[in-house]
Image (cartoon, rainbow, N blue to C red; front, side):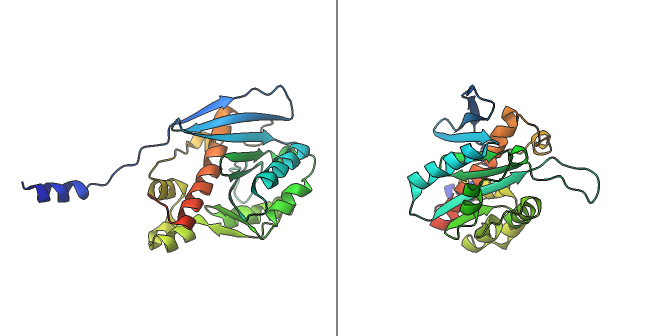
Length: 231
């Protein structure tokens, strides 16, 4: 077999992306209102995740966000989770709202919050903030239905990827395929976590890790697509 034939054979073999190597470090904050975790991707990228149901801590998170990023428009990965209801036609309320900007994520246990902080509604309704996710329109409709929260400016990553990559097959994909195509890395979505009890007062480490990964990967896929820097 000639070298050129070998090259053609090798090039025709699909490359299976390796999964992110993700570890989680619990900072064990001595508090009953919140906790902080470091989610480490491939040993070289650390995402700082605040998990809380406290409106005042949500306010503080947005104050820090504004300090770091104002007056620039923001791109934010958005996702929500809720406890699955296997009775037909019935859905439980949104339990968790995840937002991720660069290396900072907020996991807001909205179902346990005594009220919805104004800082959150102001941030979500700011037309200068662009929220991205897979199936994000459904998530936004659910937030509106469950909590009367309005999100003003958003893009579905599937539509964005189909346009940027000139591939209509992207319209049928999920975050796993988008991560592989855009980031060159695989993400894992274990069913025991995706269908777990998201309305628990204390989320376990697998839930925190999954919530962070989903929001961060949404952010990063969006960032790469908007800047034409993909795998």
